[in-house]
Picture: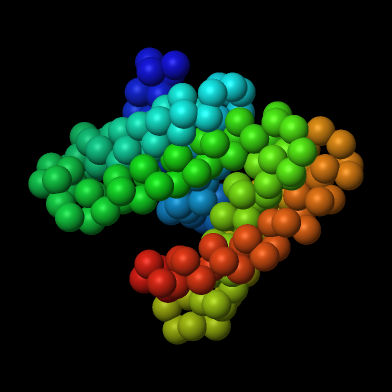
Length: 198
């Protein structure tokens, strides 16, 4: 499990940078999505399946490792400054990685759990995607963005629905998870705004 977390994190960071650099907009812009990284932590938790502590630690470690992996790839591919590796913003992203990794790693385990957990588990990653879609919707029409955020929002909403469809075991569970994801998305949007995302 530890090796999977390390390799998965290194791969996530590197592929994310290359995704942004080489894929066209709007698909390429998914690389700028913190929600996509959160979904990666959720997938890790689903893979672990049992042991919330193992899933939380492994997913958090993976997201923390993904941050320097991203910047190392940027330095190697396009000559970015190596000092970004220890910049305050990188450390802040690692802190976000710990929080998101622990929460979403556990959510992945909950998806296969009993009772309310099998509803809340898949609702959490969907809610993060929906919350990020809310950020994009707020940007529509702003001078720096124009209509581009429409596509970003639609892609994130579609991915949120896809997560629910794939993670849910029954249609009832999927429907309940969607209902649970909506208020969680509003809370997530508020958290994004409080954290300074605009």
